[in-house]
Length: 104
Image (tube, rainbow, N blue to C red; front, side, top):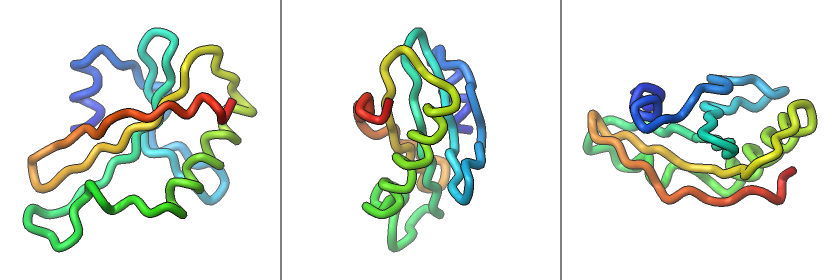
């Protein structure tokens, strides 16, 4: 569903469930000169821990490491951003994107 919503917003798929060593990048999308890594977290509606807080500091560091390794192999000339997407049942929330240009 997340991929479909992003296509409607004008994003193009670069990679989906990309394995980088022991890490997985959920979605890599591009629009213009921007490359965006999206981490998708889904939980049942009414779950104790929602998808909006399910990303730990250690997971974020692993994502940065995996994306840096990806960018070593596939250089990206434009902006690099990160965004969390959380699902609770059928409700979706796109969190504020973060600039990760320092990984290049």
